[in-house]
Length: 383
Image 1 (cartoon, rainbow, N blue to C red):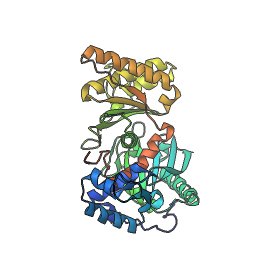
Image 2: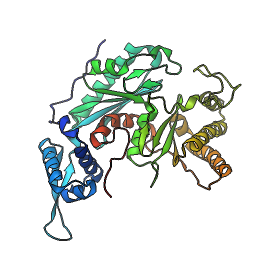
Image 3: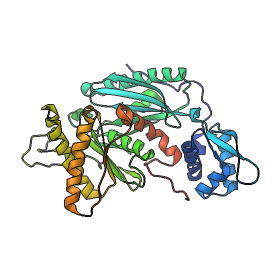
Image 4: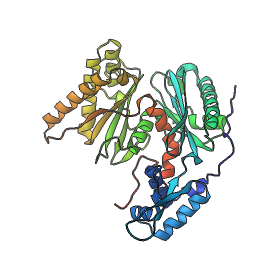
């Protein structure tokens, strides 16, 4: 079966060429973060460092493309009231797709990242590429039908989050732990052909970390953090100095396969004593406290190696015993920090977003570049 998905409804005229410029991205990002109250042209000029004339040209083009509207006037401290502009969030949409080892999630979001429709279905990642892609295409077809009823159309693309390792630039999977048959599979191109939409593929942990970076999850002043995802596997998403760090070959964040016990239990990756194998074995035995301690040792390694500002925990296994994992990992990280000196306490928290964190982050793989945040970086602005 070769399910083909087309765009939902008529195009609303989103002009992607108008979004490619750096200055336009700065303006759009400020409009996005301003939300419903909107922001004036003068404020846009002050915060971007652009001239008022440049801002007027950019916003005029965005208005013509249906991306921005005038949203009333706001009293000023002097002179005439300022016209306020607002992003038209419904002018474009993105699909997020999370392919996990045993389930599939999809979301349709508007330009502001708000969810318009969502679906969840069982999945066997080992069933083979054709079966998995057919299920994914059918689910997206249903998602877009539901999204159309909710007013969602003009789909810009599909962001796909999958277990690593993989090649983000090429959209090609590597040897997913436990599923060697996916090694070398061109997921991006195969899915794009079925859907008739642009597709971006990244690791599940990177998608989650991107979404977390966009909402400032590291806390005030925090620009570097590690997101540790413990579900059916274990991986990390790294945000360093405000930007998602993938590494040259998308190899960064293969956290679960750091060896912490040379004579430890065998791991499906072929090594022994990987933190993933030890941690999941403890969970299977019902010893969550031991699993948290092991995870904490790995987190402590990352803190010491990268000097990050925070550790965020997520994934279904963490969610099932959230308090125990946060306390257990936090205790190890705190102890390691005291031994190392310096006196700086590194917070360990549960990542916001719950079970849809990864799939909503997948949608941001499509949306974030429109706002100049394609790597999770905060655009350069004047204070």
